[in-house]
Length: 215
Image 1: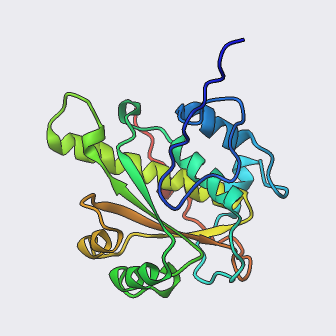
Image 2 (image 1 turned 30 degrees about the horizontal axis):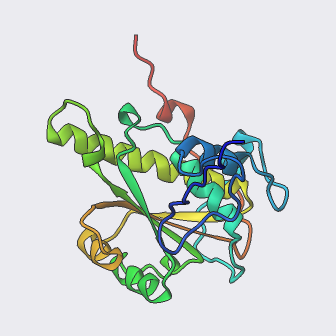
């Protein structure tokens, strides 16, 4: 019989998925991501996409209940499935676990206290990953779009898992970069946790103000 091949698992320092495949190479992106997305949840989740969209609300008060690692895994995996320019994924996620750094992020995010949430992700643009033959300003635009879509997918995944979130777009870019220790420019800060209370839907604009038909 052939010798069993052992694969070294490569994960970011300080974060490793709760469950990983036993018989496949976890370094092969799709194997690990597919496994996480298809693995059974620890509790019932909402699989009706349109219901998830309808229920999603921004939350500014989170409970102290810790978010399970399996749910964090799925949220990150969902971000990884987001469509990107040329499938080059011109973004990176910084998972802020340090309590002290979360407090510094509050200051960097215009002193918004809810930035100190149970789970904090900073989505950053990385246009150097986008290997397309376009001018630099176009590649930067692609990276903004990539990071934005990834954060949006994460928000919907969080809602489906019984969590809530708030998207932070008001921040001092350089301060955020200093806190997380990167030269990548942030596009958004996503704060996630269990809400203290469930919010009801708010009215939206009329369809005629939303959609404009061109012929």
